[in-house]
Image 1 (spheres, rainbow, N blue to C red):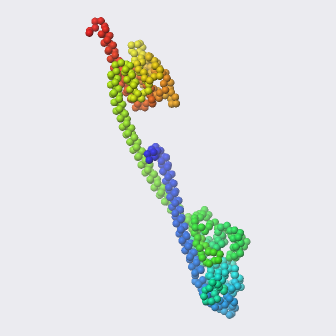
Image 2: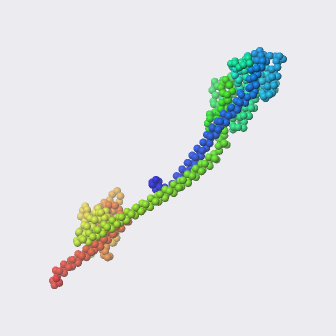
Image 3: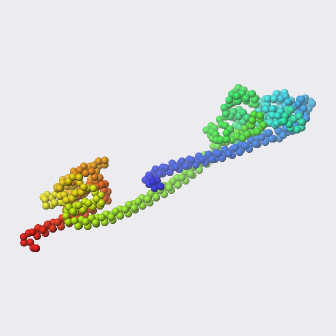
Length: 527
């Protein structure tokens, strides 16, 4: 957390960029997830609606009143039984009237009786296109009736060429059901009922045969399409079945651009939810299938998910702003604590330095010779100032012009010169100018300078004149382990000022002592 606080406090623009990117990503992800969840919800609801519609289709066809009526005829009507087994002339039976009454009652397009041989024995047709004499033995509804089962079969009418639904019920020899029939009573209707059930409820609704061919749809352009790429054997089976008339005699069926899988599908750059449900019509080829699709761009618009995405992005931005503000505050607090700790350490160092400086002052006051003074200062400068080498010169004013005389040496590889004239070498120039200098050593090597220390490779050199009461009393050169900062240079200056004061006092005392000794040896001096 401290690293992040430090990083974002120093890089606020980068922090805001990351927050914006994170908010955009979270907003986009929230919108996508919400949109997908709503799509899945619609997919589930669509599957339920498809199942309900398939049940409704079966209830109005296989389990409807028309199927019940023809089933009853095949079970109890003796004329129908005789007609199916032997065939009757219309003058000998009232079958045509019965068929006409039944057809008009339920809005059928035609009703006919099929005999054991598969030929239509008697028929009634609403527009007087009778089916009498047609061979329907290949039709599945005839085969199912001969097995004693009712059946709903959708196919193209042989007599009229239009799409029709055939309701087939077996004719039994006795007034009881059995496993075999002796004929069939068949009612034919148009697809008005089925089209009504498909229309208006779904964006796309298709009724697929067991072979996958679209037989009915609320979108007429899909009629005759097939699900999946058909094989040669499938096409041959479809043509031999003659269920779809001459529709596929010369051309192959077109392939649907979607499947009956219950999933999200893309059609013409739009996403649809697809669901399918079986329609059990007792077709020997298998169950029919109701396939419905819903255009999700209408039912699940992206706008609703976009508002959620925007809300999530704004909340993320707000949380990100709060986190950045918190981290900046934490960084400021940490920085303040560090500054306080640094100030406290500085104060402790100052106290320790002053104590050490006071101790050094006492030591210097106890020195009665120049070499002792120089040795004391140079030795204590290691702990006090971090020096590694050093030389100390005092001003010899007895010579004209004045020179610098060597009085102390520490850790020098070679003996420094005993005398330096003012302006000679860096230290002499420093003494002449009375200006403190810090000379840094170049990285990766050393800076060889001709100075009182000779050729040295320190991290830094300190050249300082010792001036007391505007009088040059000496000069000192120190080699330092590291480059001093402003605070360290201030401490160096204080230590050198202390040395200059102590040196001036010692020089004064030595002069007074020499004067006293000279007066003591002068004839006539007062004892």
